[in-house]
Image (cartoon, rainbow, N blue to C red; front, side):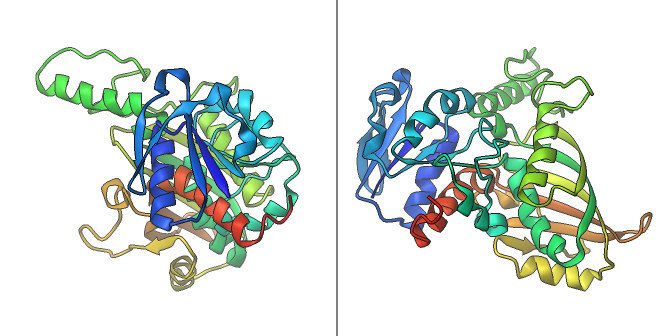
Length: 335
């Protein structure tokens, strides 16, 4: 089996390579693809040097599985073409709400891989991926009625340029120099911005709408969800404050046991200084961390959670590779 990565030089592409190496997935050859400006770049993978080649000229039939990690426009232009001969796992938003494309977090809805029709599988938005993996075991037990989510998202969710800008602005401010914003609508260093992606007519941003629609598609269309998505001056890892109303009663012991026993979740919930997870704690870790677990006493069957996860891993590279693992394990069922 050969594999390929589109966008191999970007944040998610490089992180996908890291996950593939760590999980030691077997393949015969790997093709690293990018735009013309990155052609010729050398990347070390499994102690071997690979040269990035031009996406425009690549024969997609050379690869059995192709990871797309290069953004919506690239997926729009090339994913369907690649899917004529290969299985595409797409990290962009382009196919997520396509009714003929399954939107997958393997621990949550791997059975939906039976619904592959276009040879394309979509990876959810990073903030959605960590949310649904924490919600799934609770929804199975107590049935979620309503969610209120506030996200605190790192700049890496926007790519390498925003990460570089955060560092640049921080240095300038510490040197008491003036800053200007290129990738953000406001200064990001020592600030927070309650705005990710473009606004819709109803005042919600596209990022907030994505979280609502994707959660419904992955978990349950009957769940009511409202979200506020905020960009914060952190390099990696997204955090979420989540308020849940269940249809059924619960105990905190049941909640903690369900989360701790669910694949991909880790409870860190001590009611003491530092007894909770932060973005720094989650960076480079596969788990989705759940802290600050407590009852919401203002509503019936209400619960509050704090969820933290490495967005480049759980929300992108790791989830994509786990989709591939699931397909390989099941011999590409549903194709």
